[in-house]
Amino acid sequence: MAAPPEIDVDSDPRVTGEYVRQISDDDWTVTLVGTVHDHPASVYRVRHVIERVDPGILALELPPISLPLFEQYAATDQTPPALGGEMSAAIQAADSSPVVGIDRPTGDFFRRLAGVLLRERPPLETVRTVVSNTAETTSHALVCLAAAAVNACSSACLEVDSPTPHDAARTDAPTDQAIHEREQVERCRSFTNAFRSANRSRATRLEDAAREAAMAARLVDLQEDGDGDIVAVVGIDHIDALAAELDASGELN
Image (cartoon, rainbow, N blue to C red; front, side, top):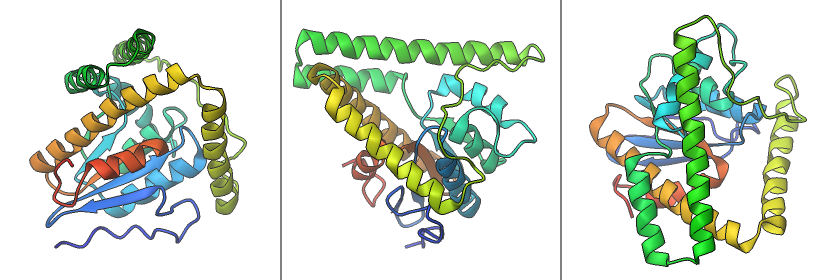
């Protein structure tokens, strides 16, 4: 069995085994990197892992149709890029490695989502929330596609989403960045548990089940068709589910 690429987990407080997982088979490794959107600790972790793994393929939790915009963000002399957070930083760090988007909306996601809804048969209110959420994310992906088209035809660089502000900076000490990132994750989870309605929580759970199954299936396809190891950059809350979906043989559980 080929040894997984060395990542120096725990050599830096921003790069921990909790947020970096490796699933290996005889001749390939998928490295999952969990992130908090736009957080400097996450940006560092992504760059650190990619530089050490030198992946054959970089997979991002982005819709395939949104990818061109983030590639434009990454095409800058600034390191890390000013726009696009950890995703454009990942593209920049990957250099010449092929980059793919593995998140919704895709045909496989919609098929899996329909299967989840038919299997679980949630209340109509929950179905409406799922449909509304899916329509919103699809609309946003189309906006990203349109912005990329405008940028390609002009000297403009349209900014679809403003960077998420954090009370941590890239110049802060690594330990301070790591502590702040962990606190951010815990606050977000506590807020969600305390204030999200039962209907919205169930809708999110159903949608995430379809998303994670579709993303895992795409990673398996990439492993079978590609050449070399894969690094997948995803939200921290997807790490456990994706690791569970992928077994050591590179097939879905």
